[in-house]
Image (cartoon, protein in one colour):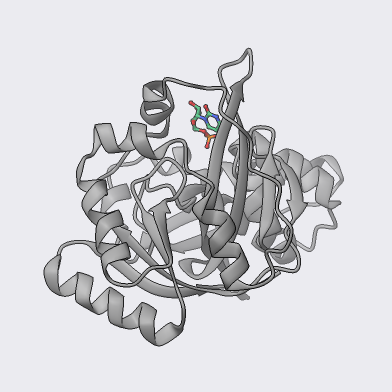
Length: 291
Ligand code: C5P
């Protein structure tokens, strides 16, 4: 049997850092949505467990020990949970098609882990309550519970407190990464002020107009520290706004930036124009689902 499941990119439309816990993790207030574009995971019955990585960004993971990949860790954590409930969870070969740039602020690793958990629940026929699955996910990474949710949401805490954002529009987006990796801990370390204002109150985010108006008054507090580490990010954000984005900023801890466009044609044309000038940048014109 083979099962295939998508691992969408996670976009932090706004991300405010509001404090820091005693263990060093930062408290966040974020509005998040998920795109059609992403990685893909396929699960196949096998004699022994395996992880095969292909796709455009597989090379960046080639030197990595497969045991350290979040997908392998997710499989191990879920099997331990399943086994404790008497389920055998037999060996499975996982094929990960890596379409998303690595360490790029759009949750590639977290989304892969969430897709592995969701896919393996189905593959192994495990019935696990959402709260229990979130707990398993949270141990793998702070963003895994939001990736398990997979629809527009407000996240707080270190990312694990989730409130659905609904009603919420589908968005036409362009994702841009100027080919640089940014380490999440390095960006958090470069953030000088850890107690910023939370997201401001909002009335109606159900239309693109209302959402963009509100987003323009919000921030990504990690953007300035990331710009110091990788000044080329300024060019990526500028390229998006210059080519018609209603809102453009960095997602997560970078380096991927997003622009919101008024329609799919506008997004596709902007992505083409930016690619003409920067043939070595990662670019994707995609959509996010509504809530
Ligand atoms: O949880 P995850 O492994 O994705 O986080 C990677 C790193 O990012 C953490 O080790 C921590 O340094 C930083 N982080 C943080 N606060 C968060 C999420 C991540 O400081 N809310």
